[in-house]
Every structure is written in C-alpha cells, then in structure tokens.
Image 1 (cartoon, rainbow, N blue to C red):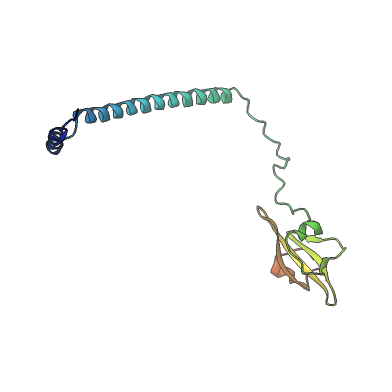
Image 2 (image 1 turned 180 degrees about the vertical axis):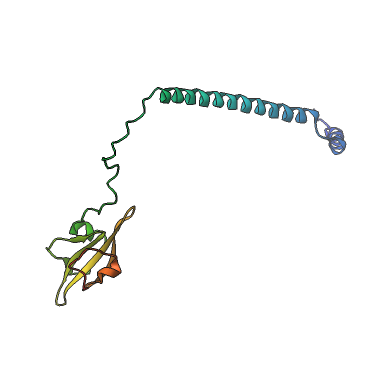
Length: 165
C-alpha cells in the first residue's frame, strides 16, 4: 500500500507559513517562570531564616560572656617592633645561587637590625660580603654584594662590621 503524502505535506507547509506561535509554548514559558520565582522566593526566605537563627544564637551567646579584664596601667600591651631572627648561611644559601667554587665562609652571619651580612670566599680573588635585608611579610631577600656599605645609607643606627663608615 502506497501512501500519497504530498497533499498532506503541502497542507502542513501552508499552515506553518500562516500560523503564529503556538499557544502551548507561551503558557509553558509563563508557568516555568512562575515556578522559578516561587522557588527563588522560598529559598531566599529559608536562607534568611537560617541567617537570623544563627545570628540570634551568636548574639545571645556573646551577651552572656563576661568582659575581658583591663590590664593594669604598668603592664605593657605590646612588645613593639622587634628585629627578625638572624638567618643561617644555609637559609641565605637558598636565596642566592653562588658561582662555581664560591662558598659561604665558616664564620657566622652578622645581623644588625633588619640587615644580615655573610662572608663569601672566592678562589684567587679574595672574599666578598653578601648583604641581605629583612622585610615583614616577604622575609629575607638578597640586597647587594661588595666590600662594605655606608651604615647611614642602610638606615642603621647601630654599628656593624660590614659598614665602611
């Protein structure tokens, strides 16, 4: 049995050219948007209730806590700024890559305020001093190398053996 679908196809094509949007499509979009708004409203109300419940519990607990005692007038409340711990040559060795045959000297690192100096021995050229600076938050960093520096230029108020004046 052979079906002749040509007239049916032509009729459907004619209807699609003259037809508008389907009423079911618009209704389904409107219903979907209503559902989304209801869900968002319910979720927002639930979240607000949780926030108020937690906030109320914290406020209630905080209101029953005694005030901290005030320190006597003669007690220091802070130690103020302090100098950083003096690094070892091993620590400083991780900050710089020394050329081949160069090495930190066996003498300890000298630290003055936020500066550290380490002697480096070089073959056939004599020694040189590597200078490192400490900054809060970033720690020790390589600053310079040479025979010595002016203490005033470094902002040092204490004498140091690596200063030339």
